Amino acid sequence: MKIISWNVNGIRAAINKGFIDFVNTEDPDIICIQETKARPKQVDMYLEKHKHQYWNSAEKKGYSGTAIFSKTKPLNVTNDLGIKKHDREGRVITAEYKEFFLVNVYTPNSKRGLLRLDDRQVWDKLFLEHLKKLEKTKPVVLCGDLNVAHNDIDLKNPNSNRNKTAGFTDAERLGMTNYLNNGFVDTFRHFYPDKVQYSWWSYMFQARTKGIGWRIDYFIVSKSLIENVKDSVILDQVLGSDHCPVKIVLKK
Figure 1: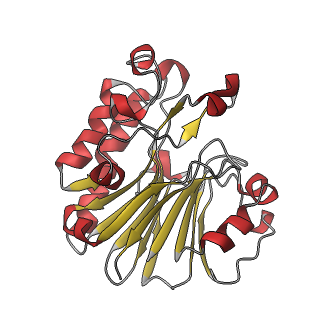
Figure 2 (figure 1 turned 60 degrees about the horizontal axis):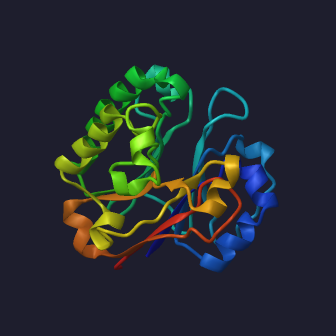
Figure 3 (figure 1 turned 135 degrees about the horizontal axis):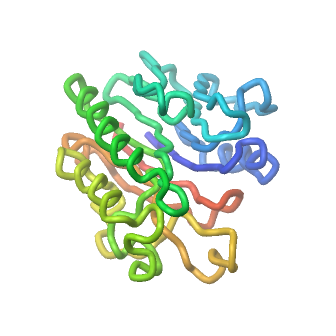
């Protein structure tokens, strides 16, 4: 089973940049996207094999949003966390399949000047509670843009960004550590503990061309599932967004 996650930075823009061709070529069983920035009725898109489509759009037009496109119909699908402040932004979809829960997330950014860092810390706590509640029933596959580079290896310039830049504060990194200390595994680091590879690049200063990036897009799974993971891959040659897709392959 192949699952792909991609922050497309606007699904309509991504379609114009080859999103459909990418899906048809990769042919994943499930694709999770973040930052749809649209409602379904605004999107002219046909995915022949992925007939089961689930959207969670933000109240604010052109902002945030998540979606799941699946070949197989999930047993159940729910949106959000039950947190009014965040549920307006379309950040979470939870799809239940036979063997696991799939959680697609677009984690809030702490913003320039760390204006939203306090909110982010609350989010990390409540989101972890959501994951652990699901785990009581069956294992979890979490994917999406988590808006944090966990360790120094996960961004090009750790020293100049440490505790200054959203996504690389001690508080945000601790949030990620708490996930991993509570029974979850970062699949990419499991397979590639020393590999330097990024999933997001600023549009400024030719960052992608120069290799100045961050790894902030993840597949994280329950420890009980890690033996069923065959590989975890960053598709950094795929263009169409400031993020690239990430992929996990599970044994069926």
